[in-house]
Length: 210
Image 1 (cartoon, helix red, strand yellow):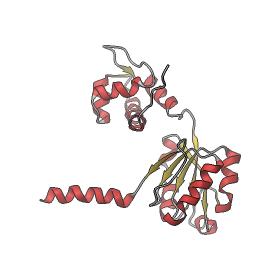
Image 2: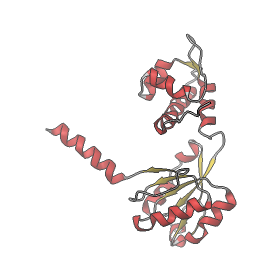
Image 3: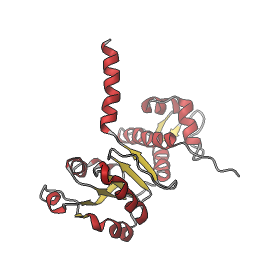
Image 4: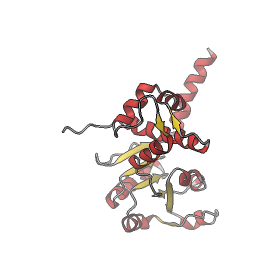
């Protein structure tokens, strides 16, 4: 049987569906229709059903989806049944701000360690996460079987840092550095370019003023 390639956007939308289902569960809802869930997620019902169909059969015609069952199924697909360890490489102002963000654990991720060229300076800022020197990245990742990393280093050293993470076994990188990373096909990189996002917003704001 030919393997179906699942679009990255479908995986992204699964996370949105999971958040919507969590809200419904918090509000005591036991079932939800495809149209209601799609509306909450900001997609069309046909798109919702197509995304879910990549991973199996969910729901019953006329009855909708069980909120708890669908949420648990999506968490399993996303590998989120338990907290996933994440490392932070580069703990400057942006890195420290992310280390102080408590939302990661709520969504199933735990930043287990941070690494910086000057760890003493990061520790002095009252960070509760263990902070180590840059030379300890690879040993820590290997010993703790970490597969996810957040990269917040300057652009000039981003590729080198990414290479070290990949060689140590990291398979997914959330990249905040202003560099397009070159990684093996088996490694996934999601780029977060804050300046680019602001530039995009600026275009729409200026169009609205015309």
